[in-house]
Image 1: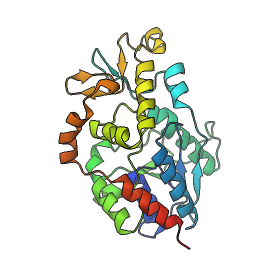
Image 2: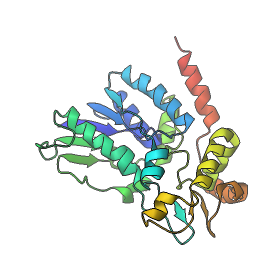
Image 3: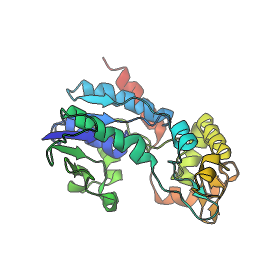
Image 4: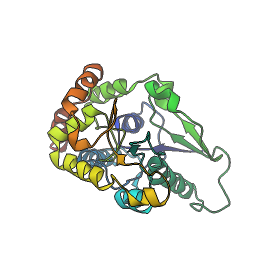
Length: 276
């Protein structure tokens, strides 16, 4: 049985990779990550830093070729779960199409099979680790294909997302930001405010994306929805990102959720890079 990690470059899956590299979890035969082509700059920095670190500790890692979610996901087909003025959100297809499907096909190839054609690997031939933490147990689902068996080591260890952050910090490792495309509609107000304050160029890019897709012709012509589309929603309903009161909306979120400080992450990454 091959043991692989579906690496999303976020906090939880990065913790699994690091725990394997340091011997606190079994050795992984492969770590595979798929790039939708529009992750945050900080996510790519974390990915590159950990790629070098993991390879240096004997793990096999592969970054699949970058896709173009801004074109494939909104100009060719609506994969992104926009919020709609009439109710929303649209069906979420981006994770499956741009990440999980790519990783599953590559896992077949690593096991010695064609990416899509028969014959198929034997049942449970590949064990794929998923980085869901104990506070996300409701997200766990068995694999849709017989040759892959999902495993959730963080849930087995009863580790929450905050436990993962603490573990990384205690081991002197950088803490990733939440992994998601720049224009992801599932971002909270606190996340958007953080991007606006610390990476205004990315925030402006998200605002432009939001405005450009307000009346997406693909969504209308494919009868996905006749409603306007948005990437941000408040409790009162969707609204343009550029007009949102992010400070007011983020205050209660920040009071209830502790988020890692990127300043600490950058400082730690630079210190590790300068080590002899």
